[in-house]
Image (cartoon, rainbow, N blue to C red; front, side, top):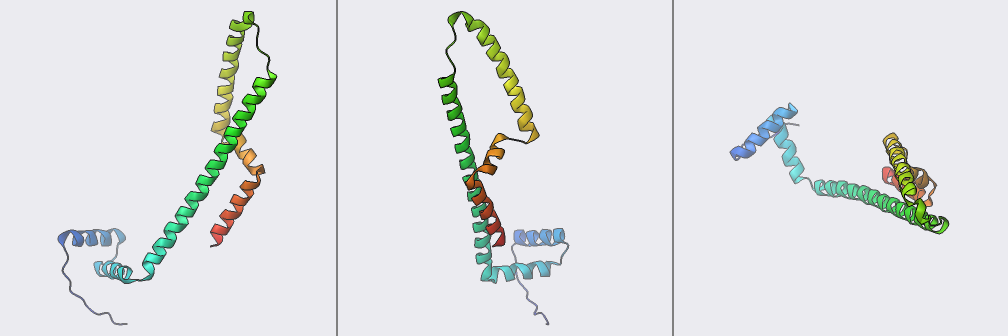
Amino acid sequence: MKKVQLSIYLDPEIFASLEAHAQRQGKPKSLVAEAAIGSFLSPDDSDRREAAIAKRLDRIVRVLERLERNDGVTLETIALFIRFWLTSTPALPEQSGPTARAKGAERYDRFVEALGRRLSSGSTVLKEVSVELPEAGNAEQDKGQAGAR
């Protein structure tokens, strides 16, 4: 199909942008201008853009829901541990206070080191727990359905 020639006037800034884009893409300016005009006049362009934004928003919502679920698991775990600890651990006699504090500080340091090793390895208890949660299965199904769309 033979193309029709069009002469237009552009602001120097727009022309510089057109020229720079064409040079970066290694395409002729006329081809870049034709594609830009075609995209501007295309009625489907806004629909495609809206669909892409909706897809990204859906992905963000799934990530936020997973983070919210993980935070809930973490909070419940800490609360349950504290309740268990307070109900099952007897109070220490006053005379053993300094020794107990020193031993507690030592145990805490070992805990922090173990936590650092575990986090740096990428393996977390939360990942192990989320595999067992029924909601995690639903999230995986949602991912599969989103990919099929």
